[in-house]
Length: 403
Image (cartoon, rainbow, N blue to C red; front, top):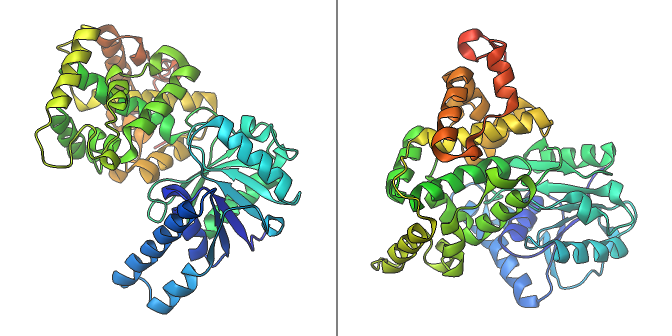
């Protein structure tokens, strides 16, 4: 399918950035939301992105004006009979998404592809309210969309191969790197990233290290920012919601750190609320200490130890579980984490890094942490099989990859 006209539903941060990215490819796009004020805010976001490109001399003023004009605001579904693809980017609530997709199904012609920017919810469940489940798909962008290259392409149970092919081609036309991901809660990036972030929160509430110490340690490893700075950027409320979805799907190994829920109760959502793990107004942060002390009293667990591998092992182990489930190839799992989270490129991604360390070492460390901290570190069966077969990574010239 040659996309000639597109629409984005939801004019928030992600929706506006997706619309801008589509317009940058020269495609007219309608940015739709329920209130005119939201639409205008979204259009202003688009203008600011283009203005920043002009200021950085990446684009001339005339071209920026031309691209900006390709984005048209709307508060209804008029004109959606002309759309080739519509991307939904409303907030993470299944009931809301189903209402949107039901409305789109009625407003759009049978040929229109309907995509969801959901970060963790079931594409099949969203598609079930339409008469076109073969043309419903996940298309998960990453924030900021104008800078992040990755797009997770997620077919539902009934999504047709042609829809997958069309969305992959459309993603490439937008200058993105599409990765096909088998449908599962969290897909690839969030499924691997959230255990890493959650473990940092657990280490904090258990007194293993301070947020600053852990952030510095993970930056030293090569991550672009530490786990707590990332939590504040993502939004702790969003991270906690996704973590709960993963827990509901995968059980105890995804148990959510109590402190995440306590921060949400205290409306410490991160940068957007002025305080999260860190405080952004320069004032002394007494409430942070109060929350931390309460969690330690409630859980009764204090005095565990922190090391970077405590966080990284959970990411590696979940990647191994995804591989054995067929969620994605080993290469795509690593590519997703490098392009979607900034995992150090020189380390190749969590599975390449595991091969470098040695899968025998990874297995032994997971078993040690299982004994010390609990079954969330229980090694993936594929790791035990590979180590038993002598496929222990780079030193054996065969592990998750062949060398």
